[in-house]
Length: 114
Ligand SMILES: [Zn+2]
View 1 (tube, rainbow, N blue to C red):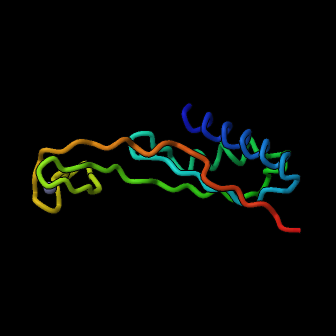
View 2 (cartoon, rainbow, N blue to C red; view 1 turned 90 degrees about the horizontal axis):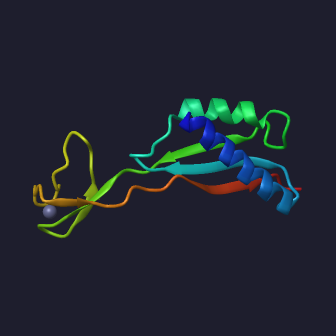
View 3 (spheres, rainbow, N blue to C red; view 1 turned 180 degrees about the vertical axis):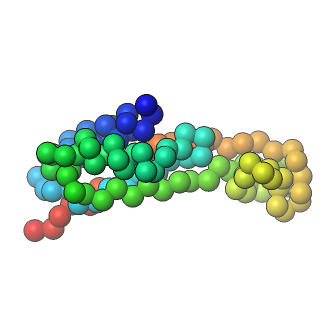
């Protein structure tokens, strides 16, 4: 299951960072793209299950979904693509190139302040 692997990877990265920082993590923010999107509920559920018994237990996980973008070959503009309407909002052109989807990354970890 994709989400469980994502949650496992997040916990491992956070634990590794917590060890370096010597603090207790209280909040983490991850982001993902559109094509490699995760189901927030499932990731949170897996995250909580894996976090149990570690310093990550009880921390908040924020998940940001980044939209898919395209570059219009007609006017050169970049815009957010929706699956229902992929046309360029500027010139209504349909000749476009999809930009790389945002990667699935751990953006930020916040540690408890002393
Ligand atoms: Zn255009």
